[in-house]
Image 1 (cartoon, helix red, strand yellow):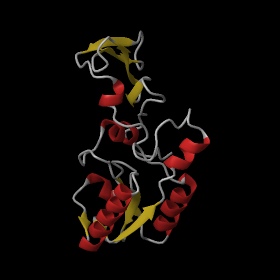
Image 2 (image 1 turned 180 degrees about the vertical axis):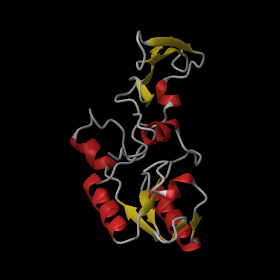
Image 3 (image 1 turned 135 degrees about the vertical axis):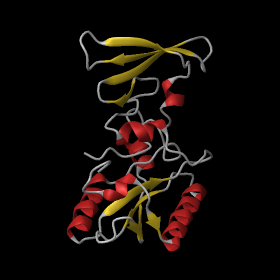
Image 4 (image 1 turned 120 degrees about the vertical axis):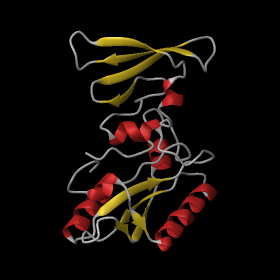
Length: 193
């Protein structure tokens, strides 16, 4: 969906109705009160590709996943969001078919600024956030960042590994921030396949 000529809304310059922004704000406030990230999507007419005139809230199921398997889903809804991917996929297909495509996925951050985190960027560029706390981070195809912690937890020895060349390239990263700080919270966005 990102940077696809069939989806001009992915290029930016969207117009979002005030009522839709108010609904997103209300959802973010509801999520904050519930101690969880809010998430949902915005739709709009295909005939007006840059207009978003509808909002759909999605349930953040991160706490349910964490309760079922805290080892795999080690973060709670306060730190990331997850939603029913089958339901969202159906909404995308049905919206496109009806001429009202899904144009934006949104989520909130708790007690942090509104920003497009490195995890968001990695996932939207076909990269992946770390699979486990302290694990390697895949910021994009053929690119990995891994760190060895030092005595100070805020300072690590980190390297960038490029696997799309032979032999693989290894470069020391001048940043000593561990992946959990650079990549942001695990699972900030859902990977849309």
